[in-house]
Length: 118
Image (cartoon, rainbow, N blue to C red):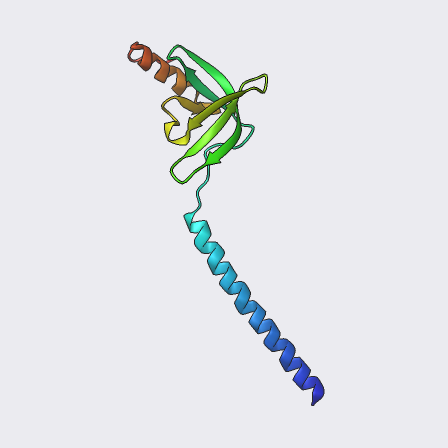
């Protein structure tokens, strides 16, 4: 009889642990539903329009996330910090690595050159 009681106790402990893990899993799923994927990662190359005259390549150095915005910190080839760009300005003044043509087109628009397609 003693072995059966031990067995029942072990089963109850496992059932309790399974319930705890299921609750934790639900909480993590709820957090994941609120999450989003950033369009780039640290170390990625991006293009930035500078002074409405040039397009320069930068590396993503870090991200700064506040209550109201997400900023992307950039650095130049010499690893000097170049400042931040706002994530919401992606496609307006800075572009992902595979979007250099879009950056050139935007620069032409800013220069008033109309329908330029690099």
